[in-house]
Every structure is written in C-alpha cells, then in structure tokens.
Image (cartoon, rainbow, N blue to C red):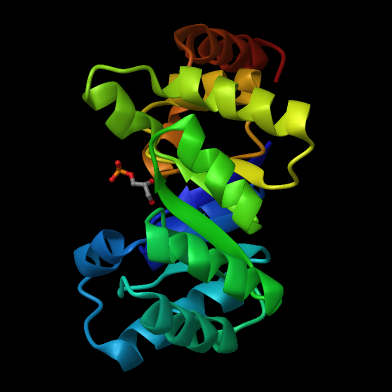
Length: 217
Ligand code: G3P
C-alpha cells in the first residue's frame, strides 16, 4: 500500500518525506485555504513547490463544477508538473470530465466518493484513483472501512484498473484497516502516520535497553 500525505502544509510534507515512506500528496480546496494559499498564481506555485519536494503523484483539485470548466482547469493544473493528478468530484459532469481527461492522457483522482456505485462509475470513466472518504462515512454512522473492502472486491472481480485511494483518514487504526482491506493507497494527515510509530512497550523496552547499555559502556 502506498502512503500519500493529505495536506497542503509544506512543513508536514517535508517531515513525512524525510521519513522516507512518502509516495505522494493529496490536497483539496479546504486544505489549501487552511494554509492561507490565496489566488490562482499562489495556488499554482504551491502545487509546483509540492511537486518539486515529493517524488510521486500530487492531486490538485478543480474548483469548478461544469464539464467545460473542469476540463479547462484540469488541463491547466496538469501543465504545472507531470506528477499532477487532477482531482474531480463525483458528480454527473465530473464523470464526463474524468472520461475526457483520461482520454487526453491526464490522470484523474475521483474525489468525494461515498458509495460502491460511485466507485463503479469512476472506474468505468477511467479514473486513475477513486477516493472514498472513510472518516466522513464513519462520522455519519456508516462503516468507511467496509466500503473500502467492497470497492476493492468489486474492482478485483471486474478487473478494473482504478486504484483505491482511502481518504479522510482519522487515526492509525484506519491506516491498518485499509491495508488489511487491500487499499492501493492511503492518504493521511501527518498525525495518523506518526501515530503508527507509537506503542508503550516500545518505549518501555527502549528505556530498558538504554539503561542496560550504560552498564556495558
Ligand atoms: O482530501 C480529502 C479527504 O482526505 C478529506 O478528509 O478529514 O476532511 O474528511 P476530511
């Protein structure tokens, strides 16, 4: 399973990249706004900087909702850097835009997926990635990991090439469960990634080793 970081924070991207486990980045308009990135030029420059920092796919989301606008925006986003993947929402015009962009060799990450039916449509349209939002599904009283399992199964049975990119990750256990469910990619904020490191027995064991090391120093 690949690890993407779900942020527009350059400091967090740098920290995850330095761990040596980062395969890509996903962003969205909310994450860009959180970092105070404002205006088309600033947004495009920010994407360029991220692409130059990380060796892997960088998802850049359109901020329009009609077919013509999305393909125009998608072309411009893709022109920023060869690693840009255009993020398109799962709406009717979005499905058309996924097909058009894919046919023009522009890879797409289909976002805002909350059902297996939506994942089937995205795969039929040729999306490179489908992004089911598992944390938001859990928040609404459903089971996000169960949706990952279902989509992974459908894609396997049907031979779809679209990669399952588990998004809206809230904790380290989500990452473990997505790995178990067969997700191709997990995109997470930095905190759940660092949370994978934690175990009290590791801390206790290390303290003892360090103490005993002093005895034989
Ligand atoms: O990037 C999309 C997704 O990961 C959003 O997560 O936490 O806003 O539900 P969240």
